View 1 (cartoon, rainbow, N blue to C red):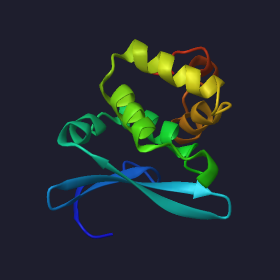
View 2 (view 1 turned 30 degrees about the vertical axis):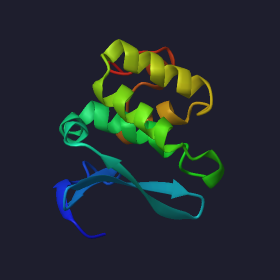
View 3 (view 1 turned 45 degrees about the vertical axis):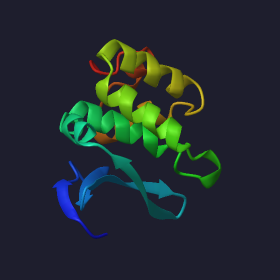
Length: 134
């Protein structure tokens, strides 16, 4: 992918941010069956600054990863915007409610499991709604 690297991958996983002219893109590697694929989401400077917070960076990656594993479950651009704005900008208690609802619903535990795998966070704490203390 072309562009200037603005935010490198934090670990062996996740996302990086590339700038191409005036456009910033969150470039995320998603495991999808027997192969990985890249998903690219346009973001703003404000999103870039918020992504520098490792906790929110990881939570966003985990929340976006699950729905983009299959074409049939991909989020619409409006849904992606909701994920970005909620996880990156909302107060922690609102982020925890948002993630818990997703994890108990359509993600069926995949979000908390991915955070557990990558960060060793306590899965039970996340399932109970305590994402930032896990």
